[in-house]
Length: 400
Image (cartoon, rainbow, N blue to C red):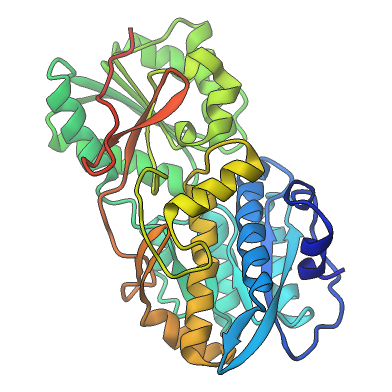
């Protein structure tokens, strides 16, 4: 069954379980987008966020008759396939989507590492791929011409964080850093070390943990022994929830506890309850930034309103960036007046638009332009922006 037809038959909640692996033979007036998604496995929570956003965009664009391609409206079909959070399977699925399912375009999975794998396949076949959740520059420095990402680069997050935290809490002198041995989390750990040292902090612990780690007690005990004023851990949601629970069990704390990027997600707060309070993080978007646009949503406020109605909770940067990636692809197709892959690729490279998510303008490496990214803290169960000033809703609070 075509994903576009499923949209008219099922609720958005039902869509979360759908992974179309055998699409019907598509008509000439249908644009096919392949979407390898982690719907099961360790990154299932994150993969489903992408799918929810894709469904929101798809519903709106097809309700308007589809995408205008040279004066002709073409409906859109998303072929979503669960790669089960398996990197090798993601590579295989990307190849199948291109060679057998004959998709016109691809979206990338969650995370920098898995994006890099899918982008490599797409590059060989000259298929534009939209990455919505990859911010590590190591993914975009491979010379790829068909990869475009809506997240801004990581650079600047840790620098702004270190400067702000030291200014607000001048007694913070020592930091302990623990990072997951994976592309994005390791990059964020390395960047934090460099930023901390530039801010005059002493790095008293700096180690990594392997993917799939189920017990952080040994590392956390070493961190406790180092008596840091700031504990910084990078990883993915399940890692960070486990680490925070174990910190509470072992009575390990510090005036500042940062976890990248767990606290940006509602499921982190839901899983931890009061223990989540005080934890700081970074994000790539927050719904308090009110952008106006001419895309299918029209404004940040409209996207937020629809998401809240359908999902009973606030959207995070993954939801927003995923929807923005498809908006950007739509705009490029309309500008090219064609679904020719090379023409759409060229239109993507020249992109300079305003969306509900914010400005999207790709640099030479295919990454969205850099901007001041939000720094947030969980306060009384809510994600509160601390930076930049344009969306600031609170000030940094020390953990007791």
